[in-house]
Length: 144
Length: 144
Length: 144
Length: 144
Image (cartoon, rainbow over all chains, first blue to last red; front, side, top):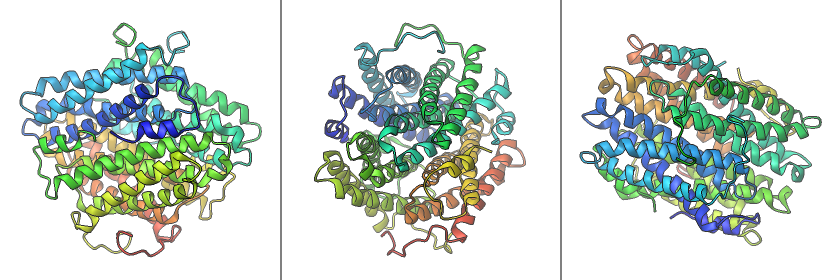
């Protein structure tokens, strides 16, 4: 656990939505970003690196998207709700794709097993925010 | 202009969609990420920093989202189309929000005028990819 | 605590230096990057934002340097020792500068008090690696 | 070319050192970060991926260090000179290591040839700042 909850609570800005849920999502994103960076590195060192290509790419993407989501969520004094909503949708997808691919290798690569677990937890933590409509999307036209 | 187009073209992986449009979006994201980082810094140094709070926050968010989008788009040998689609939607929103706020200060802060222009260009470059359905979203349930 | 240690241990690549120390530094960098991002955001929302300019800038720098250090340390299967050494020196400086400035505001801004503490811990975790000569710098000429 | 120079010039904060040299380094870092991200991705897709392991790792490290250096340099209204100095030393190393490895593959992988060139240019742009003592290091004890 990071100090995310503690710092959020000390902020003078309001967090409209549940502080615990936001802090949990920040921590989950940070954990997933790290696990994905490390898993990609381990994939590259594996004997069967040629079979790990998709895993490497999805881990690298997931690390970047989780990192950006963590940062945007950490700026809790004034959220652009629609941006947060869209970013959470991207993060959910990145984690789900990465977890699905890691699952294929979990039996023979322990780092993939852990990475899958961490990505699933991050996907879930982001879904909690989405399901609570914490960051209501102003229903704009697609791409709007 | 960066070397984005040149490196993409040298890649052994296919770029299904127009190489020029993807390279343009990568360059636009990179430019926006830099301009937003610099604009936020300049905002902080302004006499009227208290009036620039929204601008600082939106610039910082935009820098992070554009940075992640640039990186994911740069991994062109195998795109997770749905992830790219969602990330482009987030990037379009981040750029539009930032540009709108910068526009309010463009008359008295030259860095805001430039940042608005650069963000609008990035928004447009991302919309080109979205409008061309280059990255078709597999229509999933909301949050799916 | 993240899953850094667990993923590192699952890696097929060797970690010459103590696994625990590297994992501790990764976690400390991740924690500092988050706290600094959040502290900068809280600074901006404070009434005395004009007095917080240095704090905001140092927090943003520290977040970026800690984030890069975390990622490079997470790629443990093959370190460029000299790069890691230099990056740790930069990270130690970023954390020390940020902590020093946050300390000035710790009495009236709780988020600064926490951020100072987290940055000091990160500085310390990086110094452990430097002091152990875990990443020996091949003594190159300045700028070499 | 990005808008780095234009935004720097519009900043109310002073840039003690040559504006052109700082803007050039920012652009060079941005270009290298992108080229390295793209080169790593192309490496992964190559038939001889097993021979590209070092290249992938060094490219990923270089992208992260150049990205952080770009951001810190972009915050030109108040530099922590010693931090910038140390970060430039890390960036010079990251670029040199990456360029050296890319050079080994330049004959058969065009993306490595381009990446080498871009990294060499970034190394050089950072050295210009270091050689000019633009960011004097307050001579602290090693690790200080």
